[in-house]
Image 1: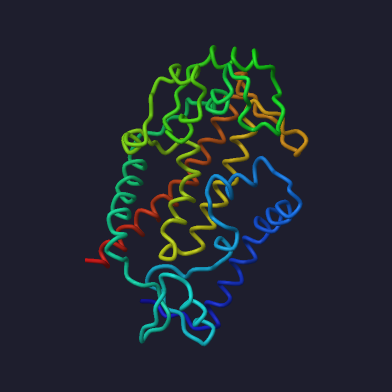
Image 2: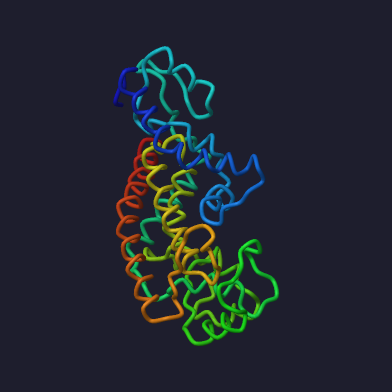
Length: 286
């Protein structure tokens, strides 16, 4: 147990709030005016984590907070007071199975060979031969027939269930894999944009044991990935200042893969930190 005096942990809390406020404030301002952003709003809608909870700083597992201000955390679920100070409680027995599953899931993903050949075709498969557009507020930069031609001309190789489940009925059979939620531990691979975005989901699910710097790191990575996800899509986001990554061309696919490799490298240590946290929580609960 590492004891943090007020002078140390209050500064860490302030630094965290300063880091996340530029992500949170625009979201709250848009929401107050009924406005939408196709990139920045996604992480607050697809992952139902309130901005206030992202802003709340947690020291993480095996840290104790000293000082009167630490009493605030006694009103936060998962905290208790000990002789060392205010700290997170031991992992409850009812949480042990999900943490054990998550550690194994993240480890198997990390140890699987990365695949860099999907080229972000999932967003195209979500509008393939359909009159409905998933992001209806955004225009397509290609006609529906051109979108269909791209999907028909390229191999569809999506390994992530939560992307695949939004494929149109016509696009589903084109996918070389047929992911299911049950099969996710056998299919998830460390180059997948959605698997790396999901590190934010997993970090948040481990709060308050997960330190807020790791939550913020995974959020920042997910935000950057979401930008590529939409830039490589068939949508026209030029009104938001985004230039397309045209995966319908060889040059665009090469650009996409360069980004994908960079994101996989950024995700690797974050995934490992989450694995280590799961192991520490389980060992502490024994």
